[in-house]
Amino acid sequence: MFRSEFADVPPVELPIHEAVLGRAAEFGELPALVDGTDGTTLTYDQVDRFHRRVSAAFAEAGVRKGDVLALHSPNTVAFPLAFYAATRAGATVTTVHPLATAEEFAKQLGDSAARWIVTVSPLLQTARRAAELAGGVEEIFVCDTAAGHRSLVDMLGSAAPEPHVDIDPVEDVAALPYSSGTTGVPKGVMLTHRQIATNLAQLRSVMSAGPGDRILAVLPFFHIYGLTALMNAPLRQGATVVVLPRFDLESFLAAIQDHRITGLYVAPPIVLALAKHPAVARYDLSSLRYVVSAAAPLDAALAAACAERLNLPPVGQAYGMTELSPGTHVVPLDAMRDAPAGTVGKLIAGTEMRIVSLDDPGKDLEAGEAGEILIRGPQIMKGYLGRPDATADMIDGDGWLHTGDVGRVDADGWLFVVDRVKELIKYKGFQVAPAELEALLLTHPGIADAAVIGVYDDGNEVPHAYLVRQPTSPDLSEGEIAMYVAERVAPYKRVRRVTFIDAVPRAASGKILRRRLRERA
Image 1 (cartoon, rainbow, N blue to C red):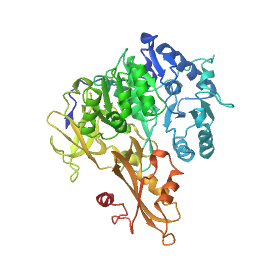
Image 2 (cartoon, rainbow, N blue to C red; image 1 turned 45 degrees about the horizontal axis):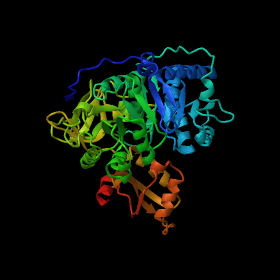
Image 3 (cartoon, one colour; image 1 turned 90 degrees about the vertical axis):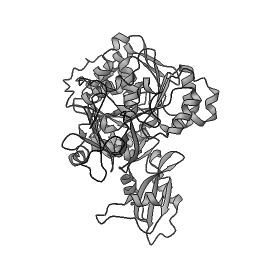
Image 4 (cartoon, helix red, strand yellow; image 1 turned 90 degrees about the horizontal axis):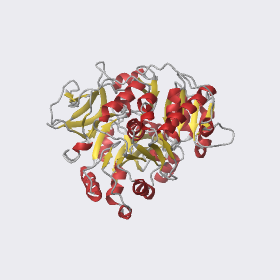
């Protein structure tokens, strides 16, 4: 068993809005949130007051403890207000990918039993259609303005009394992001107030930020990585969060230059752009002090190239997953120059790890040996919503969460992730479940059987479909399949490669033998 070298932290038994904004009065007029496109700025005092007013309006509208509110929005300065307002009113927030189709959104609404939606006017048509498909939605609010919908802007003037809800941080679920876990279709990950807040405390010693630090939030808040590293963690410590709605290289570089960004938390495709794109040379990025990459594996050579070009310490990495609130490993900011190349970091405070044999899961391995990574700590999820069997498959009777990742630990405690047991595809940091794509592909009348794996293409893992044609559709083409899928899923889930085969390799149980397909690829 491997244990963290950092001192344990006590569990943080506070509602997440109190854990994050509890020092807002202390930070007062310091800038908390800045719109990276138009410069709109909210101070800590405003964030505190505004989210309380919106919470009062939510409560007046009927939001109650135990309700689920779906937050369906790109990054805006209003996103944190909506999130903390909902949790203060006692609701659980399920975050939704802003590029989700109406059908995908409806599935999440139905599975989570969401009664409320907060969206933005450009996404309103999708939200309305999703609400119609799912049923049970009481009202759709908007962050900006839209005819026929109550706006968060108007809610700032609410005279309703602030709700005082009895929240149990240990049991009550604050956030319900959706993850495919190690395999299968997306499932609601129940993260309690204590689990998220305690993970923030665990990360503080290795991801310190405070007044004067300026963090660029370009990765999406709806993703647990963005929610933690770009929203909750910096706002908890008095840093300034500069918000961008999406990644566009020129806008991203301009924001670093114009807002004098000091720290970046990104995914590998952005590291690639920083290392190689000619546009980088046109901007003054000298304010940057560090870059951290997570959400997907980062090549050590690419990390070194990025750091050299920006004249920074080596790009640090971090490791975790939605089911872990999400962090377990980080390269500490003060150790970036000394950390071995390719490591995803050391165990954060209060976290334990085992590396177990792939052939004999009951056998613990020593330092230097590669096996499946198991994690135990206070940040482990409460479970998958409505899926006790899937929860039991993920977390064993002794409280160890089986990550499905293969790793090894060196003699100094640095973790290296070397492979994946699990089938999940990570395209630019977003999760793509093969089972979901396979189910969709099998609805095409020309497909008899389907299997999907992840393959690497220019540094990104992309979905590659292996298909068996129906005898009646001998001329079914790759382009037709790509279009069929693209019309029915969010852009990051699209099938990027198609290979037609005579039969999908399967075990006697019917399970797809993906390893054979990977070998073929």
